[in-house]
Image 1 (cartoon, rainbow, N blue to C red):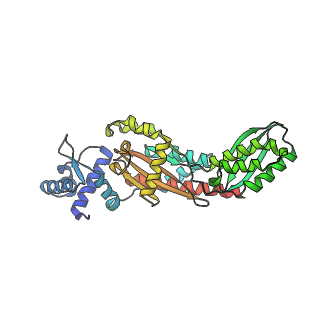
Image 2 (image 1 turned 90 degrees about the vertical axis):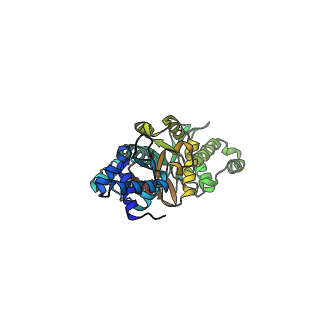
Image 3 (image 1 turned 90 degrees about the horizontal axis):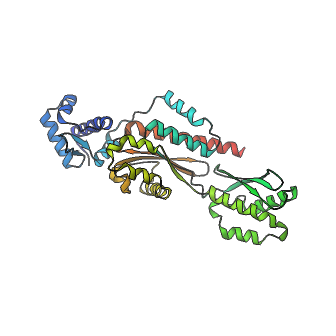
Amino acid sequence: MKLSARKEKILATVVEHYIPTGEPVGSKALSEELGYSSATIRNEMSELCELGFLEKNHASSGRIPTTAGYRYYIDNLMNTSPLEDIEYAKLEAMLREGAKTPEKILENAGGILARLTNCATLITTPDASSATISKVELIPASSKTAILVLLTSSGIIKNCVCRIDIDISDSLKERFQQIVDTYFVSASVGALSEEMLADIIDALGTEDYAIKPLLSALYELGREAGESKTFVEGESNLLAYRDTYGDISELISFLQQQEQLSRLVSFTQTKDNSRMSILIGSENVFDELGDSSMILSRYAFGSNAMGTIGIIGPTRIDYARLIPDVQYLTDMVGRLLSEHLSEDEE
């Protein structure tokens, strides 16, 4: 549906007044700002209510945007207001600080975005199920203890400490590396299975018995490297908006459930295949998010490895500023992860 130019101007003004104040917008204020008569404003606002773009607040004569009103505003009327370049440069410096691993890069991004937006931040680690194992290293720590390190083609590094029953000799390291090169290197982490591990162990000779714990540990690292995890930071920021939520505790509890968050991201990707997804109020499939808006953006790097970064806040968040902020952080995370991957491959 295409609104008239006057209705569009009134709707945009209502949204832009309501977002920072949370106060219903009346015809008198709009008349003074837009230059239309109060009667004209009232008629237009009544029609916008009938069309489902505005609704009347029972406590006053003012109007507030509905989900449809926000949607029309974002899709047709909004002019984004990104930060100045110097501010983005500061954010990049903060994001790079201590960013030695993919996990640290994402951790930095989550914290920065939570502080920047005063919303909860949602982040998924890369979906690396299609990545391959590019390198495995066994580093002796003592006579019978070693650090096992696994690197994937998507830049994910996993490690663990292993203890075996015999000394870690040069010949044991060499035999372990032969087995790893034969069965694990270049294998897809998504293809690793318990059956595969059992077949490998069954094929070993009795002289390789001591290596079995190392292979089991390597299998677990591979499986872990292929899993995408979802986590949230800054949930406490939402307490500042408790007056906009029916029960803020339900929302915060929802955001602490890993399985629900994974389903949320999967639903969003299925619903909208574009790079950025914006879901407002009732557009969210989960009841706990009925009073919330989400801005989610996908980052990409390496061999099609992808993840999601975004924010969750009340429906009256400042879309014009926060959408470019989320997009910038997403782009920067993708670049940093790509740089990290290139360094690992050198």
